[in-house]
Amino acid sequence: MKNSRALSLHVPEPRTRPGDAPDFSGVDVSRPGAVPRPDIATDPREIRDLAYGLIRVLDDHGEAVGPWDPRLDADVLLAGLKAMMLTRAYDDRMYRAQRQGKTSFFMKSRGEEAVAVAQAMALDRDDMCFPTYRQQGLLIARGYPLIQMMNQVYSNERDPMKGRQLPSMYSSRETGFFSISGNLGTQFSQAVGWAMASAYKGDTRIASGWIGDGATAEADFHHALTFASVYRAPVILNIVNNQWAISSFQGLAGGEATTFAARAIGYGLPALRVDGNDFLAVHAATAWAAERARANLGATVIELFTYRAESHSTSDDPSRYRPADEAERWPLGDPVARLAQHLTVLGCWSQERQAAQQKALDDLVRAAQREAEAVPALGSKSSSRVTDMFDDVYAETPWHLRQQARELEG
Image 1 (tube, rainbow, N blue to C red):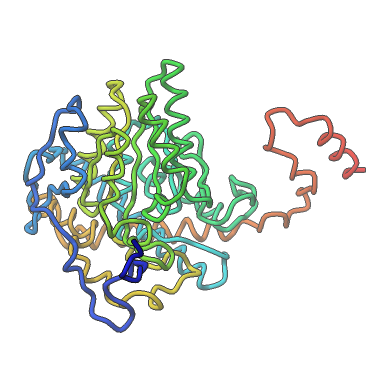
Image 2 (cartoon, rainbow, N blue to C red):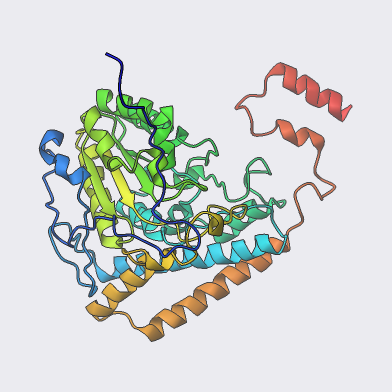
C-alpha cells in the first residue's frame, strides 16, 4: 500500500541559539555517589547502565562521596590542581599571543583541564597517549617543559617539530605523547593498534586515545572499537563530549538519540560515562579502566561529559552559534574551582593560597614566553639549509632523496 503520510526528515537542532537564554534542562545529571562501582572483571553486559548514568564523586559542597571516590592523598590533589591551573595560565598566555599576531593559531582547553590532567595522573608515566588538540594538560601533568611547547607554537629555531606541525599540535615521544593529528578520529585507530602491538610483544604498557564527540561519526571510531573488542586490546578509548564541535552541537553526531558511551555496548565493551569536570571522578574511572587493561580484560570506552567553555580555536567565533553566557550556566561547573573547593573542605587550601599560586604560575608562564620569543624564527639563521627538509623523515634516508639533497647543495 502507498504510504498515506508524507515522510519527513529529522535534523537535530540545539535547544538554544545566540540571543536565547541557555537551557540545560535536558541534561540528566546523576546524584554524586549514586553510580555503583563494579569489579573490573564484571561482564560488560551486566554493567550497561554505566553507559547512561554519570559517575560523580564531588558533591555541591566539595565533599567526596560514593564508591568511586579514589581516596587520593592531598599531595596528589594539590599537584592536580597546580597542573590544571598551569594549563589554563599557559592557554591564556598563548591565546593572547595569537591575538597579538605572534603566532597563527591556537586552541584552548578551558573547562576541560580535568580530563587531561586527571587522566595523566591515573595512567603510568610510560603509558602511550594518543591525544587530540585539547589535551595539552597531558604534557603539563607529565612535566614536559613549557618552553618546548611555546617553541612549537612559535615555530622558532628550537621548535622540536621543526615547523612541520600546526601550532599547538605537539609531539613528544619521551613523554608518551603521540603526534597530534588534525584528521580527527585517527587517534582511536592508532591507540588500538599500538595497544595490540604492546600486547603482542608481551609488554606492560597500555595505550589511551582521545577524540571529541563529533569524531565518533567517523569510520575510524567504529574500526577501532571492532579491533579493540575482537583482540581485547589493552587500551582506554576516551570520548570527550564537550557539547560542541567547531560549530555544530553534539546531536549531529548522534548525541541526541543516546549517550556516546552507549555505542560501546554493541561491540561488547564496557562503557563508563563520567562527569568530566570532576577531577576525582575522572581519575577514578581512568584508574578502573587502566587496571582492567593491565589485567588482560580488554578495552574500556569512557565518555567524559564536559563543556567547551571557549571557542573551538582562535579561528572560531562561538557567539555565532550559541548563547554568549552558556558556559557560565553549565550545570557541572568549573573543574579548577571544584577541586579547589574540595581541597578547602579538606583543610589544605584557601583563597589566599589560590591567589598566590595563580600569580606564581602566571609569572612562570610569562618568563617562558619571554624566553621563547627571544629565539629567532625558524629559518632565519644562516645555518638553516633547504636540505633540512630531508631530515627526520626516514630512519634511513632513501637513495633518491640523498641524491636530491646533493643536487640542492650543488
